[in-house]
Length: 68
Figure 1: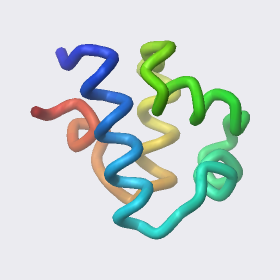
Figure 2: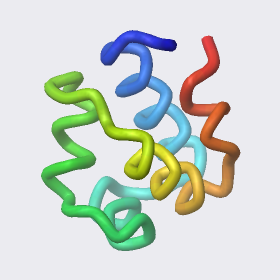
Figure 3: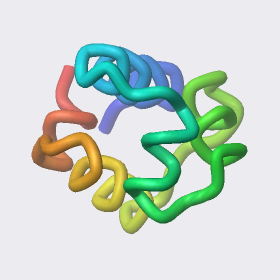
Figure 4: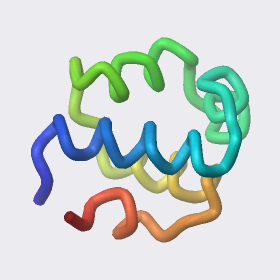
């Protein structure tokens, strides 16, 4: 399992590669924008359900956000 730091970086990198803002990702994933901000700032580790929602919104497999 990746550390909180790596998960936050993976979410940010993937979001930027898909040309999405934090707000757009939050809307697509059905989570609050503050959740995205806190994950990307490495303040929280997302739960499995949130990782699955983010992955679906980004069009990637959940494992893509977890792999090193």
